[in-house]
Length: 153
View (cartoon, one colour):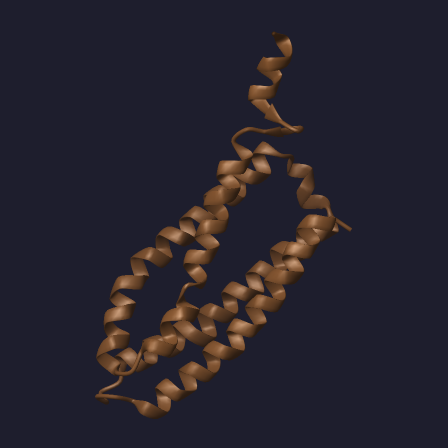
């Protein structure tokens, strides 16, 4: 009987709440990175404006969820994880990914939305190029983060 209580509270040494928190955290990351799949479809200034209006609340919610679930993951495992070099490197790489998205894509989207042009073809071409570059960078860095999280070197 005592073993079943322990099993319900902890799953292989981790709190039961860890897995749902991790799922929400990864969902928030994927939501934030969904911009990579939308940018190639934007073909006019009006579509960029519409996308920004719809995506901004989603992005803010995703940001809040990332902070809350990240803090929760640390709280339910151990704050000592923050002292491990692989965790610090992973957090730093996450920050690089999201800063790249913020400055290379979001700023470009905002400049296009503020444009007086109807189509802004040159700006949209530059945005798509930035999207590919940041997307490839994100895939590489998220792969490194996944490797660090799995192997914990």
